[in-house]
Length: 286
Ligand code: MN
Ligand code: MN
Image (cartoon, rainbow, N blue to C red; front, side):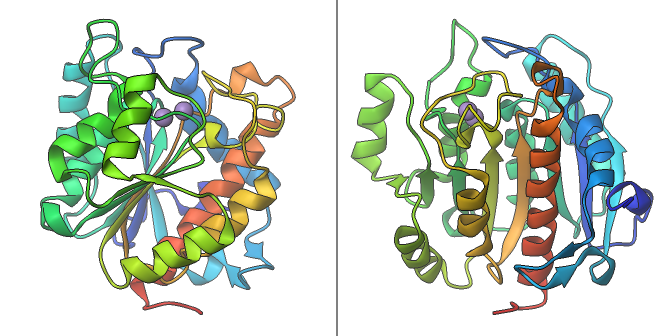
């Protein structure tokens, strides 16, 4: 089923996929720059219809704006290239779903959303194995390991929530405790979070390594002890109808899983994200 590829070049569609192939700050195993391409080709393996949500990709309007051409190396330069490319490739009122690429690239996507929403109103919901709260990593302030820290500089900590986290330094965990950002990755915790969010705008960022390393080895820093795909899907599905104003699916490094299964898992997460974004626009499907 050509579920995502068929949507390429539909600039008028309100939801736009954009590929961000860059992995230069990856500290362990690189390869996420091949993530967007792998998601697109793995999407052929999936049906357009999601029987749990009872939604079909053919009934929602989305496009694929292709990949941003990002120069490898210098992360600051990469970020500024992405910022300009977003202005060129997608309309100001489109909802963008970013495909990584490393997690650092969430920053320009969040900054783009903040052109339309107030810092104090935006929720940042972060699914990840890692805290990503380092104020820089090995001397580099713009690092995949710092993305939540960088987002906190934009919106503060009060509306950041972190789910699935199981790895980080002691100072990072202390920061999470100080600001109460850590939220349970279980049905009840997520239900009350979604309740609390109400109609507020949400940026939803999924680092795929939130899933267990055994089912998702195709990523730069796999971490044991994570959720299954079924659990992740149940958690994500609770965001149906939420006002998602930007989102991303990051850190697929396809060559690290020669079976190809990780790419299919990632493509299915992307499919779910498209349904969530579409449902938030129409005011919910619940
Ligand atoms: Mn991670
Ligand atoms: Mn991350």
